[in-house]
Length: 124
Image (cartoon, rainbow, N blue to C red; front, side, top):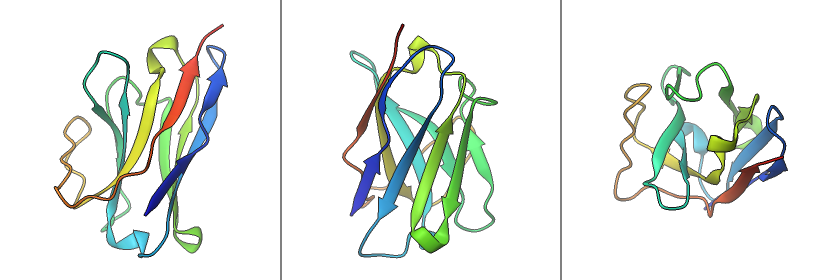
């Protein structure tokens, strides 16, 4: 089971840190991705952290502003989001992945674990 949290309302230019906590299994066995879905838009992959080498990947629109990280001791993956923009407004989800592929390609296997989603709203 995955529990996503940390969303909220923030002004443009602000920061939030999302958390994705795993229970019932060892998170380190998996790559972990963050995804988002804005109203009327398809879900898109945002960031991924590898389970094999710790490499991280970020889609073009968030690179340099978002950072994904992992705390193995806490069985938790984080998404630090800085310099937030109104276009970052979406429901954010975390999911277990088989692997990270690239900055702009995210494949979710059919048996992926998904968090319940946390709302991020960037508005003045």
